[in-house]
Image 1 (tube, rainbow, N blue to C red):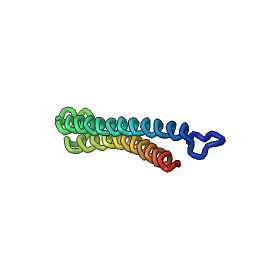
Image 2 (cartoon, rainbow, N blue to C red):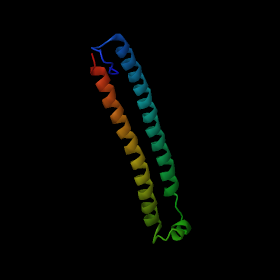
Image 3 (cartoon, one colour):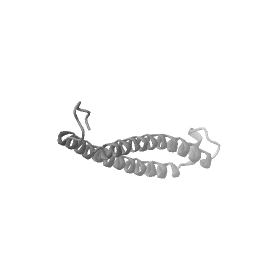
Image 4 (cartoon, rainbow, N blue to C red):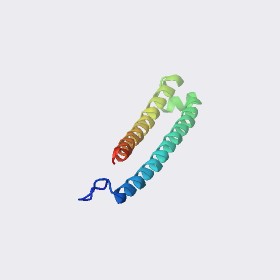
Amino acid sequence: CVGCVWCVGCVWCGVVDYLEVQQIEREIKRLELSIAQSQKEYAAKKQQIDYMTQDKANRLGASSIADAIATKTNSLKQAYDASINQTQQKIESLKQRKQQLSQNP
């Protein structure tokens, strides 16, 4: 219910709730697609890191290729994990709001 003063489950508030639920569902789908895209980007960038050369490792100041790969992978993972976790929190919040709307009479 949108909270009109006299509301006890009026038709208007039901329609508004339905429209908001539809909007929430679209936003959840958009955010889920965003997560999938981020995961694909991460995989592509991780693959590029895996092709590290000794020259590049030296320029990064690493003692070995394995160290350079580990360092670059760790920083990449932290960046993507933070972004994905934030998006997952948004999805969870939207799901809770959707549940609240669905429980209204």
